[in-house]
Image 1 (cartoon, rainbow, N blue to C red):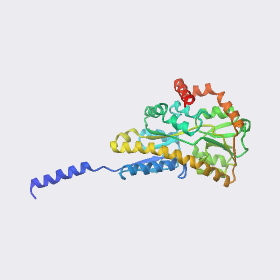
Image 2 (image 1 turned 90 degrees about the horizontal axis):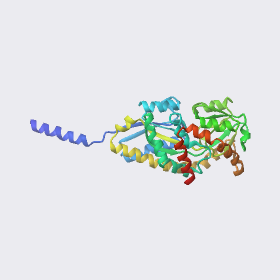
Image 3 (image 1 turned 60 degrees about the vertical axis):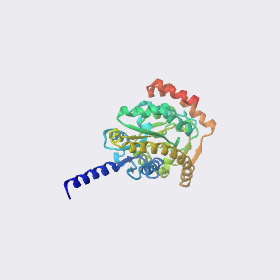
Image 4 (image 1 turned 60 degrees about the horizontal axis):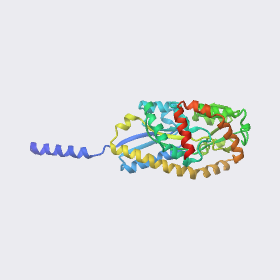
Amino acid sequence: MNYLSIRSLIAAAAIFTAGVVQAETLTLSTPDPDTSEITLAAKKFAELVSAKTNGELTVKVFPNGTLYGGDPSAGVKQLAGGSLDMLLNSTSLYATFNPKFTAIAIPYQFRDIDQLRAYLDSDLGKELQSDLGKIGIQGLDLWSRPLRQITNSKIAITSPADMKGMKLRVPNNPLWVEFFGAMGAAPTPMAFAEVYNALQLKVVDGQENPINVPVSAKLYEVQKYATISNHIADAWVLGMNPARYSGLSDTFKAALNDAAKETEAWKAGNDAADIERSLATLKSNGMEVNELTQEQRKAFVDVAAGLSDKFSALIKDKSFFERTRSFIATN
């Protein structure tokens, strides 16, 4: 073979190689078990990403906080530092890093999940997502969570007075401490990875979370009562390490962003369908479930209303607090 033929082959190979998409693999960590609503959504997201890239971009999902040792705050720091590719964790956790995220969790603020989703998709939600850049995180999307309910091992809760002296595990967020403290409970911030053992050993009497959490974490083994209170909204942050994101092709970036939006819609439908299944599972495992009546609920709403100034102070950005309240009033 002469020199020109060899050079032509090399040139042809270079052209072929340049047109080949280089396969990539990303890790995505979630805080909850395989059967939890957020890990199911993470797997749906991974499935969509693969479909949109013909399998060239793979997202591997790791549940239970295994990639960050079960410490949620450490997970956020590792995401910013680059030792995690992608992370799903709650907006209540991100409030530790940016108090504006606390605005989502003002008790009894959202009428329903549709209103929460509209808020997350509004300019206010986009502002929160953009703010993630200030702590070194590329925000891909915000996903809704089901509203939060209370479980405990002592009593069926029908009024704030029933919570007096109750040791209740809450996220590490001062809004939860203010709200439940105002009802006479003893709110106890604790990482969720510690909750089952704390309930089992009676270190705490109860906890509060979306109703699917006591199912996926098997809290029905250590809790007797569930109260449908719908007291606080929360959401999920789908975050990514900025350097990892910027290193991807435009095609892969588009696939991630499109899959994130599609998964949010899928998740909202899946969450709604799962609520009745979760309640049935809790009941079949011996838990007593009661739903607050409108009159009973008003007593809890009144407690929250009396804390408005404290909630505003916790958010620190008064303008954002007022814009959030304005959105709620007009949507």
